[in-house]
Image (cartoon, rainbow, N blue to C red; front, side):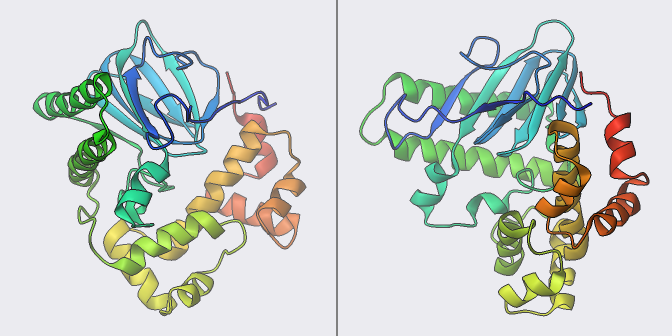
Length: 291
């Protein structure tokens, strides 16, 4: 049976003040940072830079190999679980969406980065040594700014984070053959934002096309160009991700999960799941081993 006692962590908002919804620390020494195999969920964004370690790190049941230079991106709501072998060390950089979007006045800002909120795409990269050292220099600059906070520190920290995100996205695009342009087609990034907001209620490309004042064919075309998948595939991937989360980490019945995801009936949900995974939801749940 799936384990039900998942730990949930919210951002500690009062550590530095209401504006500083960002923090950084050493994974091996940061208070409340989990390195055990306990499943847990964050309500904020997190980027981990591994300097030392081996084993695996599971993110929504996808295993990433731990090795020096490994960088893993976590979006809010993803289920995390470590299976580390020996000591793990490195930095973790985490922030709430509001730290970025309120300043840049761009509600699509984080949707432009393909390593966040992108079901069906990898959430990790392995950085070459020179690039990894450069990223750590940016992290250490953030650490130094925290050591001497001033009135304009939020601006400096946002600038450092912005530069780091762009650099990481370029390497991600190179390694995973995705689109590196974060200032491209407005429609495609709006779609990603809308999908994250409405995937439980809206399952058809037509519904998103109407919200975006475009045609289903055009929407499929631009998502294929930017994300390497049609809008239909992206919708199915997001639904499937949530279905798997609920099967593995909640005690909901299959019927309750089908209802929560707005399927017309349980049989329809079963057909969808079997088509995507190859087995029924019930068999998938019973076959998974959650340590």
